[in-house]
Length: 236
Image (cartoon, rainbow, N blue to C red):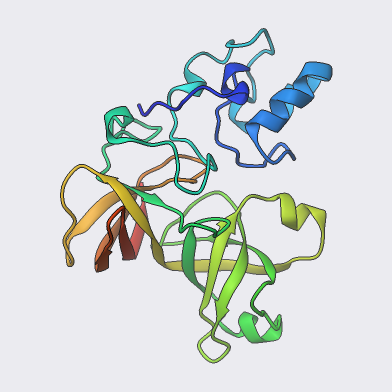
């Protein structure tokens, strides 16, 4: 499995995913909370069912997942990646978030495209929804912020984030949707990427750390990373 640099959060036996499901912004913040309120450990969904204990009791949780939300450029370097997802399956590259964006950029189409107009979805709106069916089938409700909206077709581009913003205030629920594309940066890959080839890839901030499959149909190579668009998405 892939390894991450130890932080105060991972040292406390937390997974280092920074998913926000516990209500804190990061595992580091949650670790600070646990210092005074250890009973709150049950709020970590990744440790659910594990008895609380001293630092490190979560065993390999800190060393079996890819880091999430560890910074714009990330902590991953090729020598630290074993190219296995959380279920031990191989993948080909890590898809990173664009700098200065709050999360992975995903193009989605609500199963009822009229929802985009009915909810008057606009750039900057906080949204929730769940990808269902052949496009993805992820069991996790996704949350994010809209960055582009086409009212005519119903297509929405959003940056997927954690659940803190929807929990904190107003949001719009698009319901079930189909995931059409991911866009991001690739800095770590087992083999050179080619347009027209299908790959297994790992979205760096995936809560489940499951591999995804997609067809690379756009590449733009830069000095530090390759900008990639992946369509025809599947998970698992």
